[in-house]
Image 1: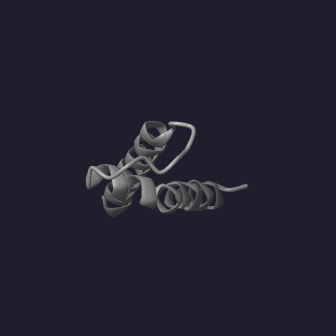
Image 2 (image 1 turned 135 degrees about the vertical axis):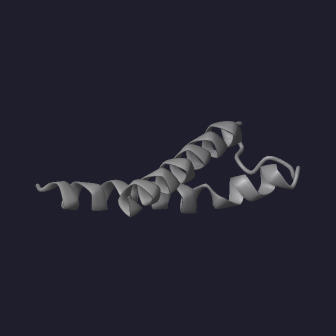
Length: 64
């Protein structure tokens, strides 16, 4: 696997993390009730926040 293919897979995975966590992020940002029944909203929120930050950093690096 070359570097571009690997980066494409990483970006795809990060985008999926952001997409999958969108409902929880929206609920937490609006101070709504928890979405999950097992109390993992904070974990999902953190994963999504980290994924979004890394995506932004990758785009910045690619623009250099």
